[in-house]
Image 1 (tube, one colour):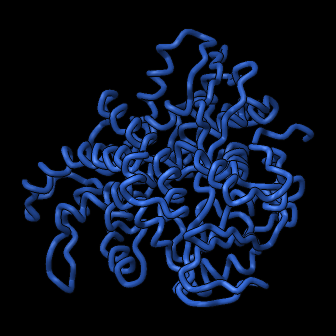
Image 2 (image 1 turned 135 degrees about the horizontal axis):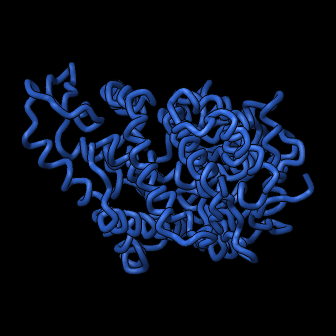
Amino acid sequence: MSQCPFFPKPYKTKASTLLTFLLKRRSWLDGLYERSYKMQTGYVKMPNFDLYVINDTKEVKRIMIDEVKEFPKSEFLHQLLSPLLGESIFTTNGEVWRKQRELLRPSFEMTRINKVFNLMSEAVADMMGRFEKYHDESIIEVDEAMTFVTADVIFRTIMSSKLDEKKGKKVLDAFVTFQEQSVHSAMRRMFRFPKWISYILGDKKRLQAGEIIREVLSEIIKPRYESFDPQNTNEFDILESLLCVIDANTNKRFSFEEILDQVAMLFLAGHETTASSLTWTLYLLSSFEDEQEKAYKEIEEILQGKDIEITHLKQFKILTNIFKESLRLYPPVGFFAREAKQDTKIRDKFVKKGSGVVVAPWLIQRHENYWEKPNEFNPSRFEGDYKKDAYLPFGMGERICIGQAFAMQEAILILANILRKYKLQLQEGFIPDVVGRLTVRSANGMNIKFIKRKK
């Protein structure tokens, strides 16, 4: 294929410290330069922070698998996300993380696709109903639509609660603010801004956005928490599972705040990353008609006019490869932040204790050492052999995304429902504004024309 999907053009040379601040205030992608996509290791000196970027897959394996205890999740990231996630499994480390993971295991069992397929299908049917209200060939902003449907799926599976549009808008708007302000806050911390100045410049907005999301979740969790009777459980959802968990060491249940932290984490990780990857997949499908038609024909051949059942999802091979290629080009989490627990050496770099260590799927999955024509959209690359240790949209090792299977099945279900009903075309002249914040999103949305297919 000769055409490449859009991504921010990197600078020719590395930016100065001041320019890095000016560029990265909006998005960490804006600070990348050409060598970022070719190097094995990189170093960024900040006034208050040493940062090492690791693209060498052998060193990535060392950081994420072999010596994972020596490279815990970044305390910097924990501080950034704690107003929303509290002390959740997403940012904790060591024994705290292991204990949380063990206590959450029964809850993660509840996310098995055979247990949640009907709830997913109901949320997707509601999404299709919303699309049906548009006139044929309408331009739909799909970033917003994907964010809402994935949030709705998570609300239903965690709390057996359908996400109403007013509450949904409140939460999702707050999360956009939280994402935007988190990037600004991170840069100010790296450049040693006093806390009071940072608070005035945007941290206040970030903290308020985190509170709004936690309040909406609290409104649903609190009545269930206060009325919970372990002898009379009648809801079969993730929240019920969390309410039932008892710590073997203390013989106590999770406190309300602990449950809220974990639900906030499940909500964030469960909807935001999938929404990002769905938006970019719809962008690619609307930009590459041949691949879209291949997927459509496969869906039609498999379904033969029937409704989509759970057994169909694994049969959509072409669609799955398209989604995998979308995850390669636009990984929802563009970088994984770790820190060095002690002085160490990574290739030729001496890394001091406390330094930031970044493994960036965005760079590794577009690296010319590991991928042929890395910036081109080519789903067929997943039909044969490919360098699996250079493909890590869900992470790797013991901290690999536990919701990986859930997200894959949810995405294929949503995409198959859309493609069998609509032909997609990118709005003429539309160019997405790719930004790297907590996830990789398009700052100007994603405008796609939905053309009803004639049966």
